[in-house]
Amino acid sequence: MKNIPCWLYISICHALEGEIYPAIRAIAVKYTRTRELFIRYYFDREVTEDDIDRINTIMTYIESYIPPREDVRYIDYECIYAKDKLSDLDVLDHMIYARREDDCW
Image (tube, rainbow, N blue to C red; front, top):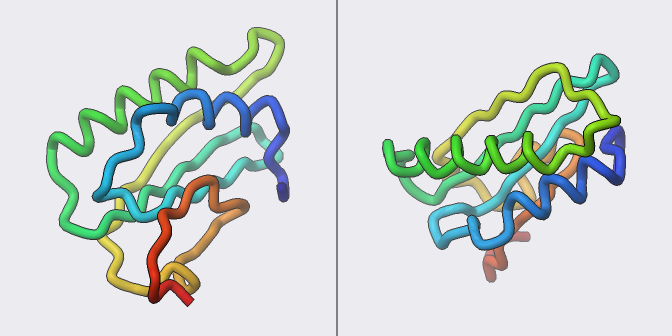
């Protein structure tokens, strides 16, 4: 995984448990050398206020799962309604989740 430490990958995966729902197509992650985390959610429809509320909850989970000895200075996210094939989406550093789509490639 390019630029993503194992402890952060595990923290994100734990936070996402039970929080993936059908409208989410994929989740991409970028982690910088300055310890900034950026998460991009790709949706199969327009993003709603409920989506934003749920993602804010996930972001709180991610923060709570980060080990005390590690330091993430900044966490941000973006939600995008994407009609492109999965293979055409920007994976940033790593695609942490992608749902199965028969015409993705």
